[in-house]
Image (cartoon, rainbow, N blue to C red):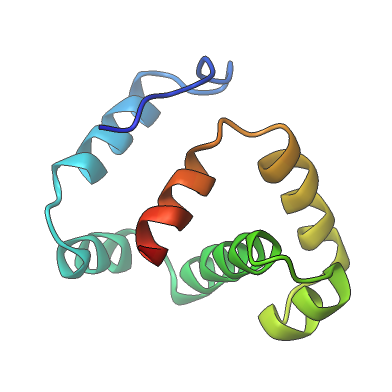
Length: 102
């Protein structure tokens, strides 16, 4: 089990907690895919996938410039990922990244 290293942000309320619990009940990537595609637009999913690409690219040790090209992302998104996820995040993205790589 993965544990949370930081407290929930102030903006996470009961509705958001229920959404996260719903995601946690899903047992396969195909179930998650169906759930997410029912709730979000293709553009929202593509943007989230781009952010994941940025995080993985940076964890792979790629430069910001290479990450921009590889993930077809904006400078702002790459900078935000570096700052918010890699430097100040809970560490969960690194754990998930490593689990997927193993």
